[in-house]
Figure 1 (tube, rainbow, N blue to C red):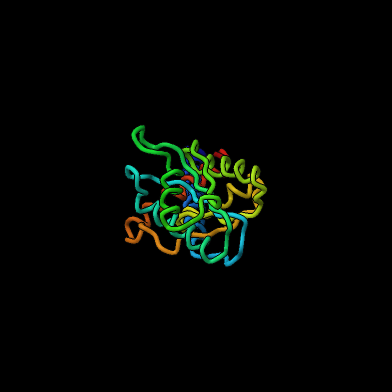
Figure 2 (figure 1 turned 120 degrees about the vertical axis):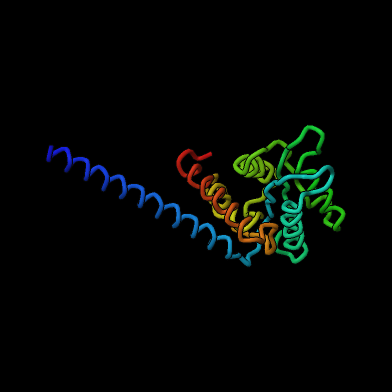
Length: 201
């Protein structure tokens, strides 16, 4: 009976230790994701890769528009010479995200010759994989990855694991302004970050 009580006590202690370690790892990762998105790289690159986001009919959603505007600013201030828009079709009645991004950029006086697109991807990893193929075809080697701040750590890690010379360029503004929306996005990103670390998807 005594041995049973001791075994049960140790089992509880080990379980609590494992839970504490997991919570610490989650908190540490969430903190690093938040801090990573707060830093920017004032460097020049061959191209900005704009990660896809939802479109509303023929128009970019507010989240996507923030990413496009940031890429256009990078282009106009000479940080990049080319913009690569990524993203396929979300809803069957909508154009591909990349095409919506391209049309928006064209309306902002970005030259058509300086815009490249890939229109098949549905996930961040596919965005980057397909963008890399487009970039290789045009001898582009150094990239600024454009997305929301809390998305940056996972996105840049993915890009570098694909062999890209990739650097973070988070949007200076974001639709996720409220504490609630930021914590919701951060929780989701932390989950996907762990999933990527384990499964590389």
